[in-house]
Image 1 (spheres, rainbow, N blue to C red):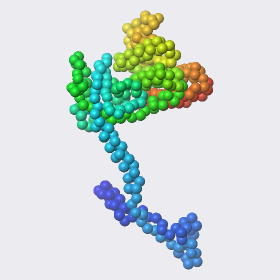
Image 2: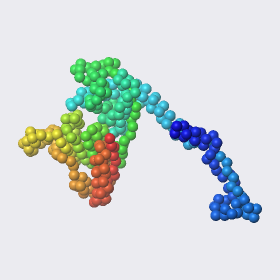
Image 3: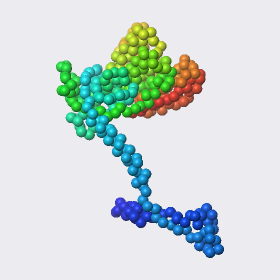
Image 4: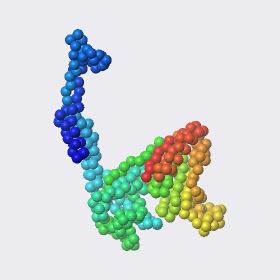
Amino acid sequence: MLDSACSDLLSMCVCRRLVRRQTNVADHDPEYCVSRYDLWGSTQEIRCPLPQFAGSPPATWQWVVGPLALYLLERLVRFIRSRQQVVITKVVKHPSNVFELQMKKKGFTMAPGQYIFLHCPKLSYLEWHPFTLTSAPEDDYFSVHVRRVGNWTNALAKECHVDEIEFKEAWKLPRVAVDGPFGTATEDIFSYEVDVFVAAGIGVTPFASVLKHVWSRKQEGDSKLKHVYFYWICAEMNAFEWMHDLLRFYDKQMVDADHRDFLKYFVYLTRGWDMNMAKSIVKHDEDVYDSVTGLHQKTHFGRPNWDLILPKIAQDRKGKKIGVFFCGPSALSSVLHKACNQYSSLEGAKFYYNKENF
């Protein structure tokens, strides 16, 4: 009954033009006549005749049609892009229930850290799932790393024959559609001479693409970026073993190219260790490589103390504009953002905070 009454009221306002405006403003000046009610309509005061009103025609459509047309155009473009052919060129199985899809699509271009929506019609006609691109713009393909944690990802792994040893030709793999790529804050990484990358958990995924691209530009000498600090905070190492391989690659590449000071990375393990691991860490503390990750940099246990880290970076990079790029949960983002504001302008260095939350 209430809905009916509201509908009747709306209909009455539109059809009977209850929203009204004054039509004789030139004769009846509202500012002049507002305090002269006794003169309204008087023959002695020609400036204050009785106000006349008329209903205003409906005009909402004028404000709606433009945004609606842009929205429909954007949906049309996304639909056309999603129907373009995508070919899965390679499927790579990684540890810890992670597999990689390498794909090609005509006219596809990307920037580091961007993401796409992936669709597999054989699994569902309606589901589109977001995945961060892990390839770099220099690669002749684009890729995503998929962790098998739900019905859809497990079904996709099965369709892609991830667990089968035998190589599968492209025509035996499922048809997929891709919408994107879509931009993120990491597109501005080359706007600064110093970058600080902070990844928490699965937030490390976009930095796989970013680090590849940064290192490629460094080797070409086509970048004003001079120093990169990479902080990776994770609860368990096993979930992202594929990232260890990438960091080991940079270890070797930087030594070979004599760029040891270009990338400094710090891995923080917040939980997941036991007494046996602790004993192993103590036993191999003097080893060249870390006993947990196999990297040159030793693993830190606990959470990073930004009150110590950011002032140290500001001191080392005096007078520099420092871009801080974060990907992770919003709670940690707030802490890091406050620390950046607090220590900005220290030693002449200024921190510019960029974030991507999930």
